[in-house]
Image 1 (cartoon, rainbow, N blue to C red):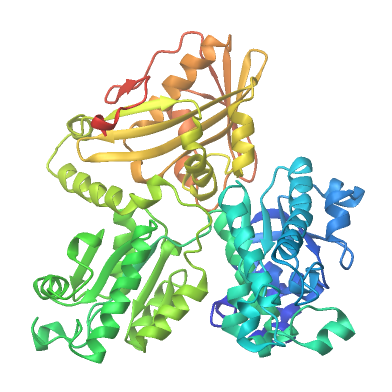
Image 2 (cartoon, helix red, strand yellow):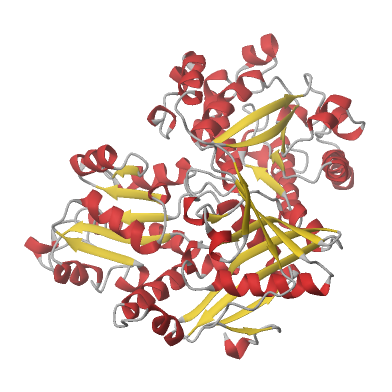
Length: 601
């Protein structure tokens, strides 16, 4: 729903929230369902109402538990039967600077006394987090703390020993350090959010005294949207591609008219500096695993000339796809999505021409568009939109662009073979299939929340749940890395099976779209059967739960020789395979059962 995309009208959202909710719930979308516990240090009703709208718009249907006013500590530390029975999938602790009860009281306090206050205040919150972690294996999101509106001593408050601003900033650093070293714990940065909204707009004494809201109700949609971005990132709902126009988007001017020497990029002019900053900003996304592509009405020769400008930051090698031609841009975007085996809802399109943005919106409504009327406005919109919100970063994330570029090379080579099997053999593929090693846990968790097309049950796991099944004696857990002559695809496939006497139930089977139709699924099945036989398993049960995106694997089990047991009206199905006389089916991938050494990568 466009009204809920950033930038939005917060007052209008609050006013129309019931109508918006009704419209979202009746739009026919299939959403993942999550239970979210909100433990508040202040009133949270309006926050939950706005949060629900943004999550529904992100493809998540939430059910909420709310603590009583300022009962976050009691619910967490002493427990609450209602919270226990709710069994949350995620916990949000909504505390603010009003919940800091140990602020320095006198300028005469010693450095040691102030440090003790800091330690005690941090220990108070850590008791909350530790208690929740012991009772619930789920992610926890904690607000950091906003600065006060009033300063008795002016700027001295931020660097004096007993200043409240100084205390709050140190607390925020302690929270950040804890988050960096704690799996499944995330910081919601209301310190930044209150600053960007303006402290004078954030703080509202009347809202506090009358209703116990810790911020102005007008900024609640901003807070709820920011929080929703973290939640959708945890559950793999991020966008993946920035598709960019060129002329007056990555440089000033028109390359076809002005030539390479005439476009504005570099330090000589104000306009050139702005576009340099924009290119640097965009390239930074690539470093976090976002794919970059070009979609420009241009001759390819001119496009490459512009991208090879000596003062430019982005070069042709930074892009996984460059479509510079005179075809409609919506068609080029759709072709790029097909080339990359990604959904159109993974794309963000940036263009300086509002007409082109309108055409893409009309033809491809699932693609997010940003009209670049001003470089800094576009950067601000990208950064505030949370389209690429980061909650974890793995080695595979940082190598994603390289992996997709190698995929383009594979696609080009494929065209030169008459036989598809000959093409697969030519890739010289090697797979490492192993259990869930600690180094892979983060990537495996990401895959369980991001993979939709080749995902038979679409079960989602958080990091703690993956760690638990990885050490469970009742589970067989395997993951697969695929390498070929073009490079390392990283961890691309995951299977989790539950042992029940002589039967193994496949609870999860997924594979990255990067390696579709490469026979990796066959290699994974062969290894699953081998390990199952070693545990005395005689039968494997496979389950397919239909979604809007996984029709690709509806008949996967049947193609591997499984027998169909039942299929319901929704399209869900149950299959089984007698593995007693199973014969390996993999013919083109070499399997090794030890970790690849660095020199082999």
